[in-house]
Length: 137
Image 1: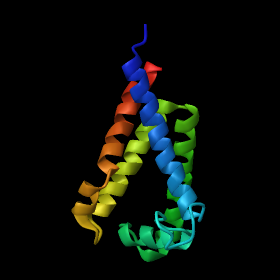
Image 2: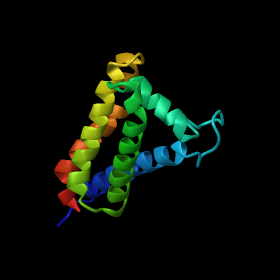
Image 3: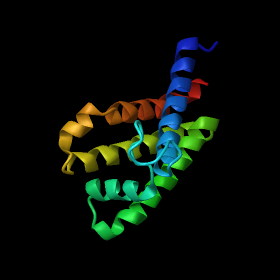
């Protein structure tokens, strides 16, 4: 018999992570509003590329390519988690993606404080737990 609490935890992790990834993608293509609108982080893809350039541990010329790679990875992980496709694998991929982001941010001008005050480590932990517990459902 399946216990309801682990089931709820797995579903909450799946849908919460998926919503975070997909909402970020909608934002970077202007779906939540134009740049400067309250609650909008980027508002267009060029601003997202600039944000990637600010934290990337790579030359500035690589920022557009990295921005597209991250966008494709986030879309794949987000959609897969939303529909429950390869949940364990996507949980692991999500955790790795978030940890790479955390390390890059820690070594960027934003510094470790930005990592510690954001939810990136919590989301990475939820992702890794999802990778180990997705068989609960």
